[in-house]
Image (cartoon, rainbow, N blue to C red; front, side):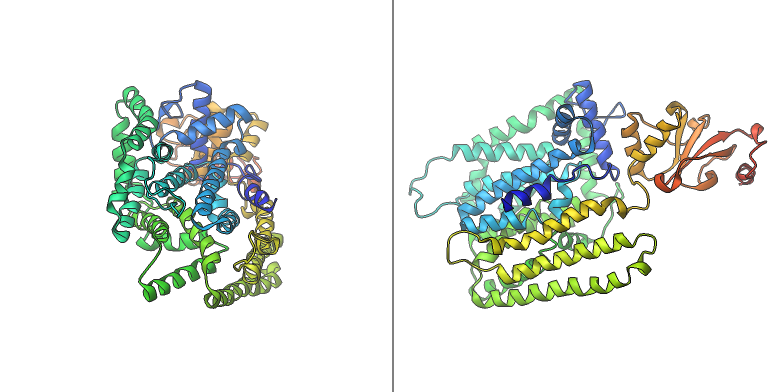
Length: 546
């Protein structure tokens, strides 16, 4: 029951607590809705034009969810949640076969409770479907490499037809989720594993004709159909959105080489102390014995290659590192069951110190909450409680997270996840208060509809991209940017008072009440130079001088 509660709360609870945030969620949701409405499941279209930034796997899933559950935020995010669940369950199956049931249960508790898995399972984006399909493909790659063999396995094994088909199919789905990066990540991880374990011949099993045929049957049909229907598809998708995105800073997501180190540490919260201790303990043991299990090398190469590959990219976004998280989660679960007595005692000390480092500062901050955030002290209190619960989870892990003599995982050991579930539910509750105004376009769209503003006469003069795209999705219509071609629009939305950020300036603005405290933007009626009388506030005169 606790495992089911963990999976539900971390992956499925409150999927629609916020409107679409950021520039990606509303655009992906628009494309999915367009596919559902037009019944064209081949060519992704944004505002009626082909859009080849990402392959269609997420669009297919979100479009089907829109059809079955209605057009809303929770339906658009459901494919990510389902993908996270499938990847977690399949990875737990691998942990069960490699290390036993206790490691599998720890994985089902620790991995879903990380910040990275919770956050990206609640995002209408391609990151979680890609990571999940890639994870499942790597699980079957581990089977093909013989990592699950034991003393009961026949000396002359049969050809693993099912594993070959599943490996090729899920790798193909990963390519349908985000592109050829899946092939590079899988090939790089297996290459370095084979190099370190000296099992180069075993690595060639992944190139079995059955696996290649399953991969091609899964991935190629859409690519072929889309290329036949759109002459510029291969150029735009492969060259611009894959090679140029990786090799050049053209897309302006420029970050330092070490960018993914803090991102990964944040994504692994609240189990950061366990992660750091696992690295230190594993390195010490390797230097002492000069030996590591082949399965340990496999997961280490999996996570390390993902980290290094995307660190060399000229375009960096936090979601790129997500495929490394499942492998690290399995290593953490295994470390809790494999450590000997002495390093486990030191781990407890590290967990206790980490829990105190979280609990003591937030207690001090809570005393200063009215001064830290005088307008919203409840939000500061909520954040302090969440951080304290993360510390409590590490405290309980230090007390009860030890190897068991009896088979199974007792409730007292699993209780370390209870503070995480409470913190997650509280985070869902206070999430809307994190923002000064609604970061999505839902509130703006509602206000425009209440005031009967004609959308054909509306332009956007200044607004965050995420809010603008979300507004378009909510209105089911693209609202054009203010530009030389749209000077004759009657109304304009802008985040600056008195239209001060609009150019060119052959006009004046008349403000219209628009609940700026909630929407975060201003609504103005455009007055041409011959209609300046009656403004009263003088805003038009100021604008004319500018």
